[in-house]
Image: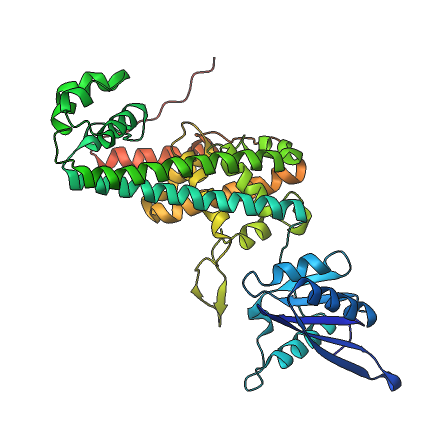
Amino acid sequence: METVVERPGALDVHKAQVTACVRVPADGGKREQHVAEFQTTVAGLLTLRDWLTAHGVTQVTMEATGVFWKPVWAILEDEFELLLVNARHVKQVPGRKTDVSDAEWICQLAEAGLLKASFVPPKPIRALRNLTRYRKTQIQERAREANRLHKALEDTGIKLDCVASDILGVSGRAMLDALVAGTTDPEVLAELAKGRLRAKLPVLREALEGRFDELHAVWIGAILAHLDFLDEQISSLTEAIGEQIAPFEKAVELLCTIPGVQRRTAEVIVAEIGLDMSVFPTAKHLASWAGQCPGNDLSAGRRRSGRTRNGSKWLDWALEEAALAATRTNDVYLAAQYQRLRPRRGHKKALGAVKHSIICACWHMLSTGELYNDLGGDYFRKRDPERATKRLITQLEALGHTVTLDEPVAA
């Protein structure tokens, strides 16, 4: 194979050790190969860095192995050009599977320039990503704990959730705290209702009649305490994210102009894709990397599958939340796109199309700095008025009507 990188290095990364291989020029125009093994402690990784420097390595390639590559990347990123590659792209030749042979094979592929680097954002974006991802796990845990609360209340026979839309609101929380404190009288509990819930006092008294005993108080009290802890954690993380994302505030405000994208969603998008859109040549490349477009599996003239590839699940969750919110917004293009596709493609694929539109809009906005320009909820109708007219006439004639069109009168 042709030599593209003169002094490449390759790492096969594991939890406790790293197998490194370098290929350098030798006498007579030949290539010389060196292999060594290092520990993944800080001292071991510093030794690895010095070893690579001693061999004059200019480019280091490593295979993505869970999160084990992250400490190695942090030690080496300031000294070398690093490539993080997909494990599927460097599959070992069958029958020769060892750590050493893996490192040698990766090094040979890197030497020939046959490997494509995965997207790794810069340090500030990676730090922001850690915070937004952990906040998402805490939000999910809070939702699970709230579901446990609903199940616990079913065991007591109290049907508060059938009357109050949010049992963790001001009124619901006051009633639950009173129950845990030992108050079980439905009349007293119902009087804790506030606002519009007071209009339902008779139904509320009936719903609060149950079998709430001391064990239920311990059980539900623990759930409420855990919910309070999670609320505090989410609030603390949100504050830390606000400080970390301050340099990117302009980008967050820009993304918030997209229908359905709230601040929390915009923070996740910035943390997952970064701000430098030159990494993705076009919006389609970004959509493909994010797993928001159909797959491409064509062989012998036949399309075998259009299954979407796997992308960042954190980005996918954020885009799905934004798409669902956009479909419930009046007179916007994204809602019109969803309504147009849902009858014939179904909810999931129509929502996928909206997610694709949002991620493409993010690429254009972050590339140009322009605000979101909505095409309007009547875009598809105005795009081809003749087609829309013909479709409506066909529907009326199918109902037995005779349609006559008059020319519009000039103003």
